[in-house]
Length: 114
Length: 110
Image 1 (cartoon, chains in turn yellow, green):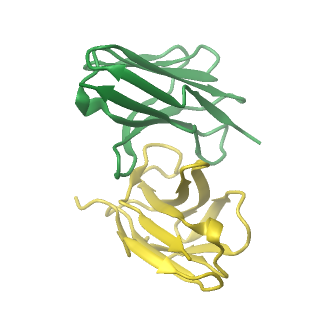
Image 2 (cartoon, rainbow over the protein chains, first blue to last red):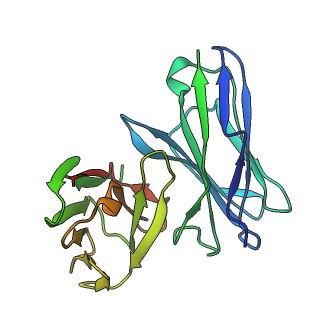
Image 3 (cartoon, rainbow over the protein chains, first blue to last red):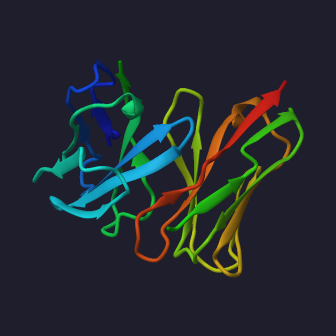
C-alpha cells in the first residue's frame, strides 16, 4: 500500500497570505488527523476528520480550518498567516474508526512564513 | 487540559549504553502509543499498549504501561547509532484527541 502523501512538501508564504495543504491517506483509512510540529511546542493536534466530519478539534484559532472529501483526502487551510505559523504540518491517517489508535504519518509540509 | 509529560527532553549516550524515556499523563489513558522520529523525518509508529501493567518487547526495546494507566516507559538496551531520533509517547485521554508528549531526543556517541 502507498503511504500517506502530503503536498506540497515545502511552502514559503508571507504574512497575511493564506495557504492550503493537502493530504491523501492510506487507501482504506477514513480517519485523518492534522498536527503542527514546532521545536518549542512539539506535536500539537489540530483536528481530526472521519467520513467527512470533523470529530475533534485542538486549541488553535479559527484561522486554521480543514475539511475531508468523500474519498478521505483532506485539506487544511490557514488564513491570514502569521510568523508563528511557521512549522511542519503533519497529516496522519488511521484505519481505526475512533482515530485514536496507530497513526500513519505523512512526510509533512514545511511551511515558512516570512 | 490533558497533558502528557515526557522526560528527559534530551539524552546523550555512548553507543552500547542503555536509554530510558518516561511518559506521565495527568489523566488516565485508554492506551499509550510510542513513535520514533528520525532527524528530518516524520513520526513512525512503534507500538501500542492497552492493558494496565502491560509490558511489550521489540528486540532491544521494552515498553511498559503503568498499573494506573497514567505512565509509561520505553527502555532501549545497548543503544546503537540507528536508535538516534526523537521518541514520542502519545495517548488519548478518555475519548479525546491524541495528546503527544514533548518527546525525548536521543543522540548517540559512536
